[in-house]
Length: 267
Ligand code: DGL
Image 1 (cartoon, rainbow, N blue to C red):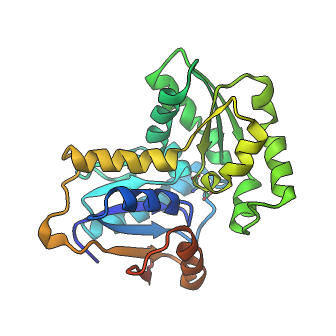
Image 2 (image 1 turned 90 degrees about the horizontal axis):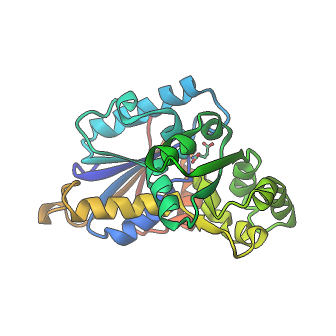
């Protein structure tokens, strides 16, 4: 495994949205992506369990000497700070913070809606982050536990998914939010369905993309040490804790690459 990589961690395949955008923005950088397929989904687990699982992934990446960590999973970001994760001397970038600041940048009146997993909503992850940056803002969060399984089944375009989305988004229609945060990795993949239900008057903030942009800025301004000549060519390594085959199928669809290596690892 390349020693000068940026580590991206996620509960499963959702973080591939961040990886895809990050590779586009940083073609010289190498990445190690870890997805905890053995324990996914995190979104319906207790916060204590999620912290334990996430810490193991962080330790794994630190053992491989990553130069920065990107927490691509909103659920992990909502339950565990960088110090809880045990990353003390390595810069850590959280999807939730990137998403919260993106939402505030986009929002016209600071009336922000969030859709996320049950754990993220229970922990008030986005509320804390958004109100910490902008105390006058208002945040309404709704958990959407049925969406991750529908998306994992590839049901993005089915009428049933649209119906479920419409039901979940109902509170935002009457509460006059001006911006909706896709507070779970998977929701980027049903952005068209969400857009069609919301109409055009509500902006959409995508934390997965915001996190990739933050990584790109950090490499440019030196907060992450840029790849040097000896690190080239850039490499991509996938590490998963279960079922390589299924992961490779999904990864080749969501984040196509010809040079990736996939390893099954134990945490
Ligand atoms: N990656 C998770 C998130 O962003 C969604 C999948 C899960 O529940 O593990 O919240």
